[in-house]
Amino acid sequence: RMRAYEAMFIFRPDLNESEKTQLFDQLKDTLHKFNSKVKSANIWAEKRTLHFNLAIKGSPTKFREGLYYLIEFESEPAEIGKVNALYRLNENIMRFLISLQEEK
View (spheres, rainbow, N blue to C red):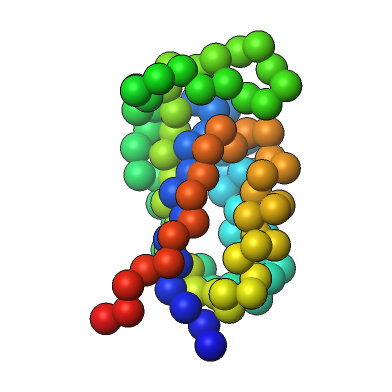
């Protein structure tokens, strides 16, 4: 049975417009690959100051700001682990969290 989820991402703030668009498309493509249905996908905050510096894995660069992106989608619970694994591989994603939405 499909369940409602929300995914919040913090991206590195130094991406240009083309890289952002490509990244947004990759995130949605990953969900479609695992038979998930995207309900909405929007920039939540552009270059918001972080409470602490974030580094990219394997890079000495630390960022004080991040681009926040929110996706609401429906998916089978068994697919969430696979989606998580692919998102972890993307070097432009500094942090992300996928949470199950309450049923109404």
